[in-house]
Length: 189
Length: 447
Image 1 (tube, rainbow over the protein chains, first blue to last red):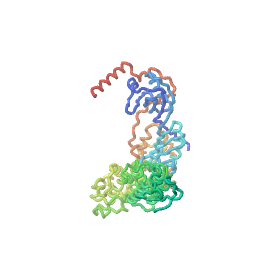
Image 2: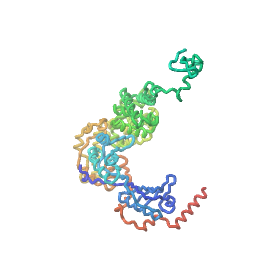
Image 3: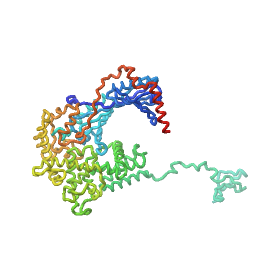
Image 4: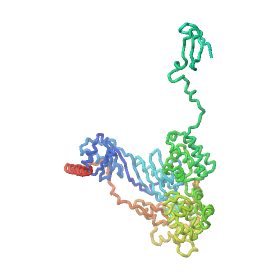
């Protein structure tokens, strides 16, 4: 099944990345001297939001920082570097290190509806479906470490460790979805 | 009582005539000749803590099963009896419970979780033996949230390495109908209904709901409740039944009402109206109020009516000129081929009725339609397929309007970062002083 014919649009909606600054950070100083920051003393972190790229970062005093909200891996890296520069300007001896994209979330819409019961029966035990718990069937690809949630309307959400894995996962699952499509109520009028 | 002890000599006189003498029931070794006590009982000689006896001898008891395992097995039997399931199901559940209980994932969990495990074993064996119950029922019986039951159920499946048939509403409705107490023994004559008729009609309604996107993604119990209510009303649509609300119906049948059931009733009635319009021998308009009279006919001929409705809808859209150039109209030949009987899908599922439900008027393999839907980039196809379809799920009909897409930043991640943009994130010293001052002022009146 050649998926390139239909040019499925995989839209990356969220990229989560972490990095370390290799120095202790004083959260109160950041909260005082930074704009766009929210100090959460009860949890022990500071939330800093950048405008461009639109990223929210959780900053811990140990120097570990988690960036969420980017829509591509490069954006995540740029945002992380901006953040590190910002902290440098605030006076901390920041060294940008250990940058790693940890999680990527993407959505994709199939041009057909999917019969979830058939899909699950064809792909056990990799696929599991409990309609009383969650309306989507879950398909976990172990070697890619990707999880795909398949909805009966044809939309799927994919989470994986990087964008390449996510794309591969969609390619892998497409033929399985195609053979379980529900033709009557979506394509027919 | 007086026994000679060989091999001992009295330290006082050297005689070897030493006897056991139990004075005040304390054993003593006494020399007969001089009367001195050679040794006093075993009390002094015992090692600290008592005579050394091997551990196995002291704890040797008859090997018994763990008490909580026994209790758990009793609970399984209790649940099986409450649900009135067959003997094989109970035995299978007991086997599973014994297996799962001993596993490391479950041996050390809390007693409450072990109880939930008992419920999950019953659920699993019910599903495997084709008498499915809902997670909600198990949750109700154990007084826990069905999500907890579900999570434990999935863990148990992984641990025992078992696959179970998937839950399907059309299977459960039969057993669920039994709970409704509306036979002639329980209620007055005009309200009574036999269980078989009710079940048959409710099953047909649920299959229709599955075909028209009402079932997918929703909780099964409200759907079943709505189907049974409508089935009951339509089997004898006298004025008593029509006037009785869903609430009062649930009270009468002694079942717990579910709030979403009302919406399901409305949705089902809408679908019935859409099909009722196509009945050739009904001349007046079919509205949600009078559709109850037609339900019997609608359900009997539902596949044909479905095809007619789809064709009418396609014709109407063609007239409006909304069809795509590749001609995504309903294909009459393929639907005729489907015939009155539903398409038997190639996949053998454990719930064959699911296939009948989902593949209602015959599936076709029209390759053209795929290419017609090849532009998912814009928002329009998503909205369009809702408008173009006769039946579509609510998430498509009321599609969320996505926020205006942020222009994609073409970045490499390694660009230069200018000082000016970083400055925008840092307060100037004056701002810092003002901010600190304001914070002080704000916090002091509070203190």
